[in-house]
Length: 103
Image 1 (cartoon, rainbow, N blue to C red):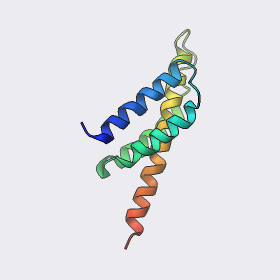
Image 2 (cartoon, one colour):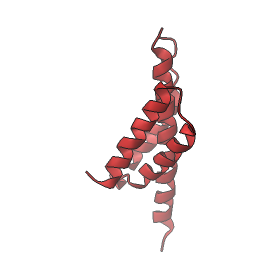
Image 3 (tube, rainbow, N blue to C red):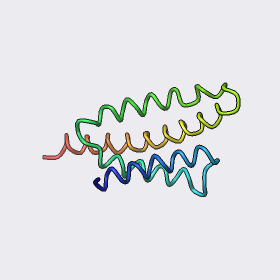
Image 4 (cartoon, rainbow, N blue to C red):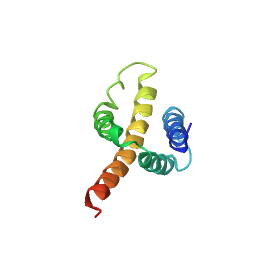
């Protein structure tokens, strides 16, 4: 297991913890940094999937809010994951742009 995979696992765990337990101090910053770093390690063939997943998560993250008892937790976790993927997507976009523009 490489460094990129470990960072991705830690990032997802941080997003889940932040969603389930109302976050932790500076949860948004930690998730954004971990997402951005994890985005650096995304393989070229997986970049499009990350971008689509980031868009999809941002659209549907609050969709299960209406489920009694657990809906709020699920929506909070999905919202944290949406933020994580958004940060990763920004890194993927910047890396791809750099690769296209470099001489």
